Structure formats: structure tokens, C-alpha cells
Length: 532
Image (tube, rainbow, N blue to C red; front, side):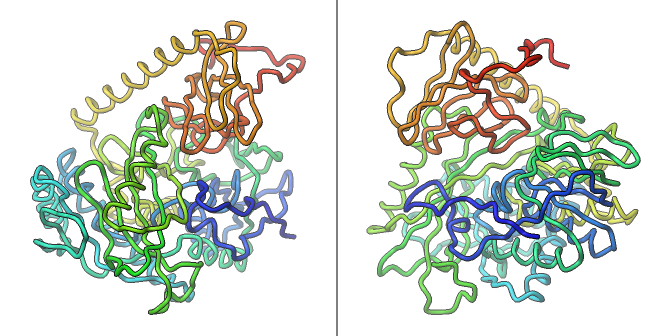
């Protein structure tokens, strides 16, 4: 039995991605069966989760995918969906933090992930637009970074070429070109994966947030709907929702912005473009109206992205959205914005994803995190790697990445990052002790302050004022207001909550508590420093 758990139709120019605003029928949900037992339970119904689930089902395992919200709700449904091996400055960044051996393994994994996905989409009739990928220098200072990336690409075996000029309406200072990469609608991909998984007996259950796993034979998986049992659990949740392994302290949560535009009378650039310098700018086109065939002559939209920052540490996110709008209007006059959205991803200290068995779980829990905004290739590579681990396979490039060495530079970067987290924790609590304003916040705004000596987060959205605890339910950080998305974001490890306190994403597994909510017997406050 299927039932639907889908977001309401989006309004024009709201924070909904081009892909999620598609009016075609949503992917339906199967019914949750408390106490059911599966060979594998996958938490997260994005590209990593559904690809992993399908691979395991192909091997004959019984598989359930548990999704806290709806299929594609987080990273996959909000990506710019470039399936590319040319990834800005990532390869030179990996090389500067590690060895050429690790770099080659990373590229080999991404190449295998890309090839697998292209074969799969071709076999299942999913539209793909083949495009050349470009990494360009937007400033003279960016040329040195471009040189470093060119050398790293060559060492990794990528046949990139230097390009002096680009078909773009603004000045550039050279670029790298990698031909025959790909772009697509990520929800088309998820639809195909979901249908294939179900044909092989797998189930996909929306509205089932995984909250805990007790490892064993089998492991008990606790969700918001009840408990199920699994031989293996795969955490494909962007960042692991279990703190074993402390991955929340090993990756940095990053948020960036994207907008889609109708550009009347303009010949849109037909490549996939990404600047190597800051502020970042990403460009691609997309068929309008959810076109499946991408036919020549059909209307195309321009997708512009950029302005990334650490989650919860930007005072005015609306300013970043407005900046993208102004930049687009400057170089594409008359552009009419149809969609604006954002996406979250996680960056490891050495830019290589963490994929494999979670420590101290007896090889019962696998995880993948740290894609650094390149989840379309890394997500599939992670699925291939985790599936090989679960089925006792052997992939040489995955083995290399599993056993990479932590260098002093990685340790130093980690120390700096966690010192920043500690600083955010201290400053957040200090600011939360200030008295709240007497007046309720204006529409679309939120404020943090003290209410009866406890940190409170108060906001007004669509005429409704909500009063919540300002303490993040993960590790006690004080949330900050995200003006662009009207959400409460934690600056420590990237958990995000809707204005009414509903958990949206991140390592947290509980909503923010409403201040005026009556406490239940035994629901006692536990100080942060006494948490286990």
C-alpha cells in the first residue's frame, strides 16, 4: 500500500527548488510495519540511499529505505545536479592535503560513480544532457588556483585543457575544460531508482525518522513511527544522525544558494560553469516545466548558484540571495526569477568523503558523509563502496580511501574548525542571556534572547508567532535565524529547524521544544554539560 507524504505546491519565488516544484506525481510512500525485519535498513532517500538500497536489493537482500521527510527532501532535491569529474578546486585541495595516490583513488571512485549512473539512466530512459564542464577564474588572483587545479587534474589522469575565452557575458581570466560531462533533473533519477527498487521487493517509507540504532544480531532501529530490525544499517543522511565516530566534528556544514531564471531572448551558455575564486558562481541550464526529453527548441531556464557559507554563521542570509539576484540581473538583463532555494552539504577536512563502517558498531552500521557539494558522483561512488563492504566485495580505490592517513595539516584544520565551534557555542549562549524585545518579531524575522532565564527563539512567519527553546537538540548550541529560509539554524554542526521547531536536517533527531508546551511527567531539563 502506498500513501503520499509530499510538500504542498510551491508558490512563485518561494524557497523551493526547480526540481521539487515539478508538478508531476510525487514518489509515493510504503506503509511502515512496526517490528518488521529486513536484511538492510537505509536511512535517507537521496541519491546515496536509493542507489545503495537498489544495489543491495539486486544482490537479493530485503531492503527498507526510511526517510524522515519525503524522497529527495534534502541535498539531492536541492542540488544543481552536475554529474562532473571537474569539480572546481577540489582536486588541487585534495592533493595539497594528501598524496597523489589518494587523489587518483578519489577520481577513480568518482569516475566509476559517474559511469554507473550514466549507464543506469541510459538503460532506464532518463533524460541526460551531455555538457562540457568548465572551471574558470573570475579574477586575476584566481589564475594561480586554476594552475594548481590543472596540475592536479593531470596527475589524476583527467584530460582537461586550458581555455582562454568562454561564451559568458562577463570577464574571465582563463578556464579549464573537461568535455562530455552530464547534467540532469535529480528527481528523475530518484523516480527511476525508487521504481526499480520496488520491483525488486524493496520498500520506501516516508515520515520515518531514524533516531537511534542498537547494534546486534539483528540491530534494533528506533524511528519516529516505531521500531524495526536490520542485519545492516546504512546512514545516508548527509551527516550521520548517530554520534559514534564523532563525524559531526570531522566535517563542516556548508550551505549555498541557487536560483532559476527565465531569460527572454537570450542565448544561454550551454556548458556547466563554476568559478574557482570567491564569491563562487555556478551556471548551468535546465529544461523548463519538468521536460523529460530535453528536446531541442524547448524552453530552457538558467540556473545560477553560489555564495556558500558555514551553516548558522551568516548574519543575513537574505543578503546572499539578493546578491545572486543582482549579479544575475547585471549579466543577464531582464532575467525573471522562477525559483530560489538552497542546499546543504558537508566538507571533510581533507576534502575526501568519509565512507565505510562506523567505528564501534561491529560492522553493523555503514555511513557516508563529506561530499563537499559533489554528491552526484560521490553519492554513487559511496553506494558502490558501501555495498562492496556489506557484500564482502573488494574495490581497490575504495580500500585506498578507507585507509587514508590523517596528516598534520588535517589535524590543524580540525583543531581550527572545532575551536570555531567552541567559540560559536560560547558566544551563542552569551547572546541568549540578553532580554527579549517586548514586541513580537516583525513578519519574516526571528530573535534570540532570555525568557525566564532560559534561551528562547521567537519568530513570526505567515502571521504566526512561535516561541521555542533556542537550544539545539543535538549538542546544545544556540540557534540563529536564517532570514532567507525563515528557519532556525545551529552554527555548531548544521542542524536546521522550521520556524515552528520542526526538525529539517542535520545531526539532530528531535524538534526544538515549544516554550509554552506543557512538560510531561519525567520530562526534566538536563543541563548540556551533563549529557552523556
